[in-house]
Amino acid sequence: MADKNTIQTQIQDTILEEVAVQTVRSPNYDIRTFTNQNLLRSAKFAVRFLALPSFVAETGVNARKLTYLCDSIEFPGQTLTAIDYRVPGKLKVKIPYLRELNEVNFSFYYSNDFPLYDMMSAWIEEISPTSVLNKYFDEIVGQISLFQYEDTSTSFNNTAPTEHMRVDLVDAYPLNFQSLPSNWSDDGFHKMNVSFYFRDIQIVVS
Image (cartoon, rainbow, N blue to C red; front, side):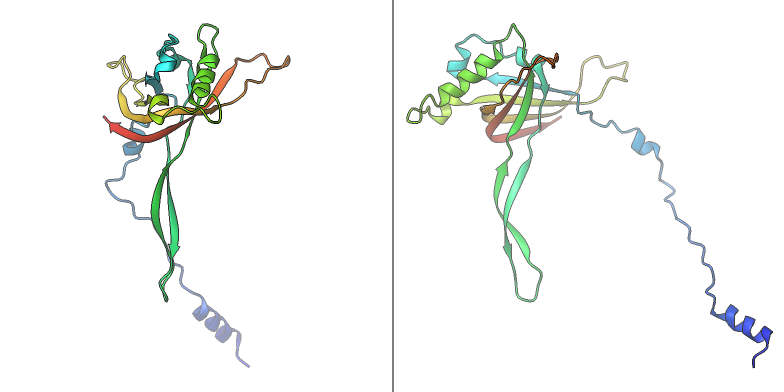
């Protein structure tokens, strides 16, 4: 029978040595390189309706007011439609074949001095007054520009916002606008949510 000292020696031989693991940091790493970045804020935006269809412009609406009434916008996303392709003995790959642009949703405050409800209703109604009377595409579209500004609120030298990016919605028109629910228990402001289709986009980065 093995003595006590022999057993302890065998146990010690089976214990793995402790290895100290240390994280090696780059000597050039500095957290200030991240915190000092001019991160873009979602509230620093603007929208401008640069062109409207003739039948909307003839109503005399001041499209500039839409910039101030606009509460929220969406910078458009893009989607690729792909098909699965498999080679025997290999993992499948997705082959893209179609690029699609996502419609955007805008939210506007409803003001008593701007006929926003009438404007959107007339725009949609004039596009398709009946199922057999529809205007041509070139007659119904307008031009919309979305602006993303840099955050200059902490700068004492810049009093005007600095434009970072502009996204032009080419040949845009409203697909739908949601109803305006009203009830006695809600004392908030009316907002109109409008979805816009556009044929293409043009991105300009300053």
